[in-house]
Image 1 (spheres, rainbow, N blue to C red):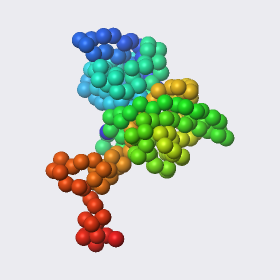
Image 2 (image 1 turned 90 degrees about the vertical axis):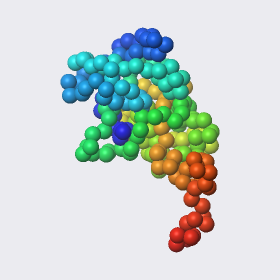
Image 3 (image 1 turned 90 degrees about the horizontal axis):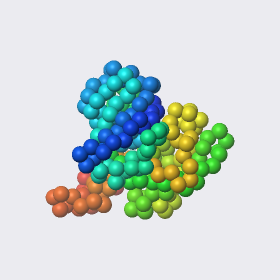
Image 4 (image 1 turned 30 degrees about the vertical axis):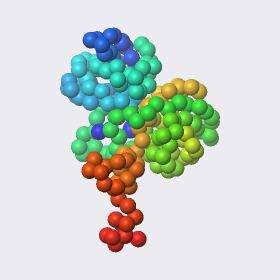
Length: 217
């Protein structure tokens, strides 16, 4: 699990084919890599990946073709800057919101404007994911926990405060930049409970009748 609070940025040092998948080297001098172990989960632009080797300069991870196809990691090249967040340890502060590192869809930056000292981003997402975003709800963009300020069909708006722009890769976004989107987990579970997603047992989930029968409403 992650929080959407970026701990450091890094750069892609190498990308190499490996047995049909890819091996990616990530370099960063902003994290104490000696404190981590092989097998650690590290979110790279919001994608949960496993460190297969570690060094004082960073780590190497294997990325499947499936992951490259369904996330924006396929846009990375040597030298690309990335957001990094090691997995959450029990007892750490939960400063953002719970994030799994499992990307739901790829969005695209369609507008970027100044809003006082902040940067306002408008991001387009596939229309079928619009139901998972709500004004003042949470969303994870390239691993960054953000609050949604506006929603319309197939798009949402967020504000990037100066600190976030400084410590993440967001300041480098341009119109057309593809970003990894993970919707709020609560929205996913609510949909299933309310019957928006078919239950494994064939039931209709929680209905109005179920709630009334248990004293709600």
